Figure 1: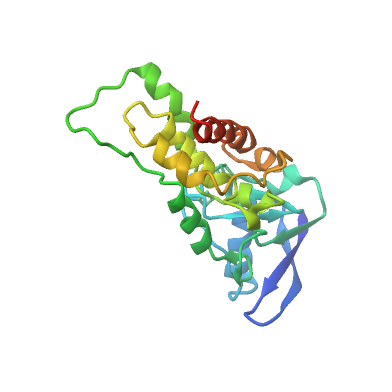
Figure 2: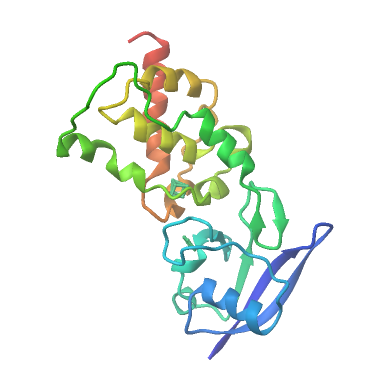
Length: 222
Ligand code: SF4
Ligand code: FES
């Protein structure tokens, strides 16, 4: 059995739609490799781990940002499947987008341990539990693609990264981080599309609200 892939392509000048027949019994990423190896070697897409870890293969599948390597074509239950590059990112070629702006925004959120004191730090399993979930963010950009206001603010992913370190008992930079975030997190309307699409179920929309409350308290000196 086969399905049709309708792929939005971009050659550096203009964009256009291209159609390919692919077997149904594979993932979207495997089908993209199938096209590249058997039909059109010029098709560009990004992938690495093929197992939901590296975050490179996020694209829009039938308008929803998803990981191509984790999406079985048969589960989509459609005869025609539209593939497009992530929204809110500049397109380099076909399904490949530019992540430079994304990583610049991550940096602004100071996603690293800030220590003022020296020496060995011990952490209990309970303290690890406080932030461990947020270490699972794979920087895939799906949440940013789904966000209706991402172009006007930081977008959800950097806030998740900041939250991860704010909850880490070894960190001493929470105030610094909240200060850095305070001008960049107020555009969110709590639409929650980011939480709908996050492949790691990190609920970025909820994290943004939590961090906003923390920034508010910090700004009021509470
Ligand atoms: Fe991807 Fe979720 Fe991290 Fe956003 S928060 S970059 S959707 S893993
Ligand atoms: Fe690494 Fe899909 S190829 S997450």
